[in-house]
Length: 68
Image (cartoon, rainbow, N blue to C red; front, top):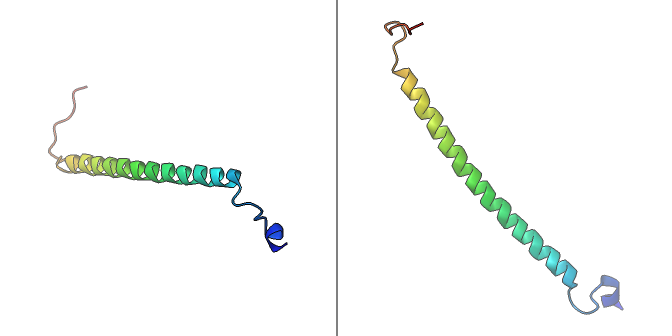
């Protein structure tokens, strides 16, 4: 009777197992997406730092005016 009350009447429900596998796959997909986005963010941050360092070399006071 205790097994019936707890819902263990013949092993695990295949629907629960299928849902658990689906959720585990979803977690793996989200983790790999997170790693990809972190790498992309790191690359964009490095590019932004490089761009900023290029503009630091320009001396505004002695720079020639742009053609108009």
